[in-house]
Amino acid sequence: MSEKNTSANQTSRLEARNLARWVAKAGLLAAGAILLMYLELVLPFMPAFLKFDFSEIVVLLAAFSMGPLTAILIELVKNLAHLPTSGTGGVGELANFVIGSAFVGTAGLIYRNIKSRRGAFIAMGSGTLVMTLFACVINYFIMIPFYIEVVGIPLPALIDATQKVGNTLVTSLETLILYVFVPFNLFKGLVVSLIVAIIYKRVSPILHR
Image (cartoon, rainbow, N blue to C red; front, side, top):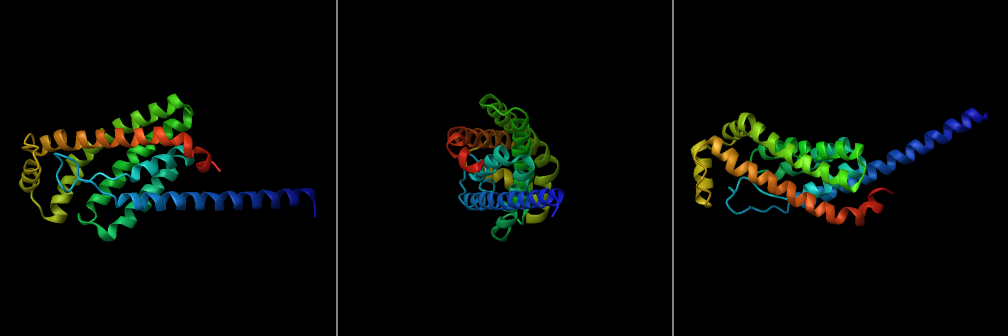
């Protein structure tokens, strides 16, 4: 066997090992994200149809360790896995995927180009802002009208449900966006970023094996 063939075989085996490692790591992270997605909380002054979960912690870890595209793939997998128990006709999962992808995609892309502690904070801050702005736009023009159409709950009922939990500032679609979706996504981005900032250094050796 020539040196060229030997080298090609070694390269092929290395690529196969790397692929197997990537699949195993992505699979474990996706499983963790799926489990955490079921730990849902309703935040104070937030309507029951908008729930906070901790799955984005795992997806953000994936974005930092495996890149933004892998993180978006895990974002997709966790939402597909959540579909059978959806209480929103799949609209909530679609919104979670699109808005979550804006968060981890932005953060992962920035961190890939600025791999430092400072870069991580810039990435998480930028991801939070992009997620919040994107959530406002997509909920206003697409997700809330789609939710109303699919689930059959009119906008006044959504406003009433929000007011009943104490958020009396909400009186229209515009104020629903301003006083519900803006604070919700800012809070989500802040909490997820803070937890990742605390644990990333400890779990980084495992994530980069």
